Image 1 (cartoon, one colour):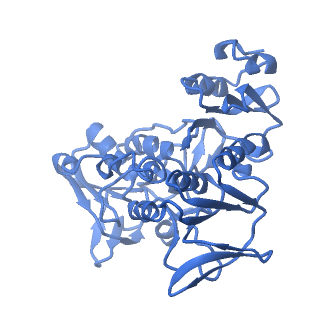
Image 2 (image 1 turned 180 degrees about the horizontal axis):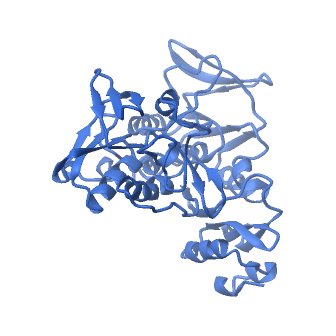
Length: 410
């Protein structure tokens, strides 16, 4: 081991665990410290709203590595420990006990925190959020047959938890401020697919809903009061209104922060020898020619390899297209690419939209910006290739399932 080097990873999620793995796989043999504020070793978060929440996956299955991996790879795992300060000039981090730890290279994989609902009653005991494994276990306990569950927010977390609650036999209402759930993410054409999916399974969707307060007594929520005067009784309230990147450490240290910790394509921050990866990184994307911050599993899985190479003096860039997936009831979906609201002029559907078996393509001119496959499999790679090739495509061929995806160019 090289005693003169100390690489420090701050964070306890997938990005942190995969960064430690990538450093060892790429030959780093110096001191490696991973500091996480949770009591559990690094774990993967998608199962918390999917398989683990549904009881299809065990607790052991969510961890990034087996329990003995860290000892075997000589990783100093500091769990239940908070990094309270970063001195980028002195190249030190400060821990909650006051200890100052020097670093040669530092990776910030601090993740994100669910946004709190800014209304009276939001701090009542059974108002539930989802970010950590304990949150998932609380949701699982609340989702019982006949329970009245009100979900505030129609994003991915809101809809996935609504599906889990409904499959457990609960009575579920989803409150969404927009006209449709996922409207800003998918646009009207694809968002209506998910709205219909939930109503078909008996979920009540209330659009244009404005929450005024959460009612309760004895410290527990018992309902949600809407601005129009409606009160919805509830045995538990689930809040999924977005997440906020954990930038406090970087911000206090003077790093460039703008909707996350700003990095270049190599995941280097504005401070020397400090890198960022995962939810917290607002990274420059060479293909998209802009900074983007992606709050999905694939970034936490894949960015650490690029960051690790940079920490070791390499020059790798992170240029993978954003990717995410969801599983709700009998619907499985994958999405790749990047398109902002208003960044496309039409959506081309290939397959049967009504039967929820299709591929959708977000188009700007004759080029594909993003693609989503719903209950159609083994197409994500050709979809990705069509996007990255920037090839002009023909709408009629693209919409025809009989035409192979590698034959749709104009």
